[in-house]
Image (cartoon, rainbow, N blue to C red; front, side):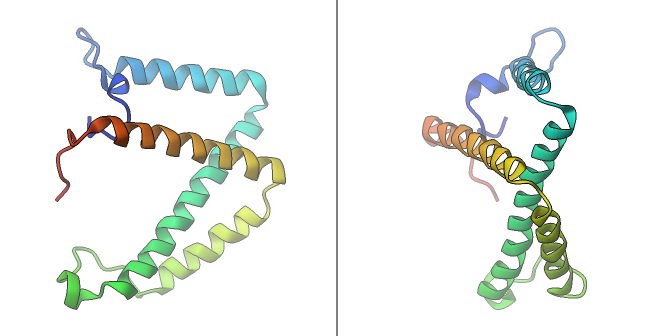
Length: 135
């Protein structure tokens, strides 16, 4: 819809008005992962990938507010309560949870993130300016 993935994923079923290709792709990937490993492993890999992204977002919150204060960007649309305390605590918690993950879980989480980055890269390269600018 926004051009974040290849256009094939955005195909909408004519009758049901659902993203049919995206649903089929997600189902096949989930089924493959579920059949090739335990549910616990699948859940752990998902959690690791999400925690890494959460850690990146919390870190970006700290970095961006330091690099681009209100004077440069104008007033923020949302200000995190307690200033940097919440993102710092979130980074500590996410890091401590990640520290408890096994090497296999971390590796599989990295593979999941790399696959997502590759799909995103393909989408960006094939969009050729078709994506409307974000405000």
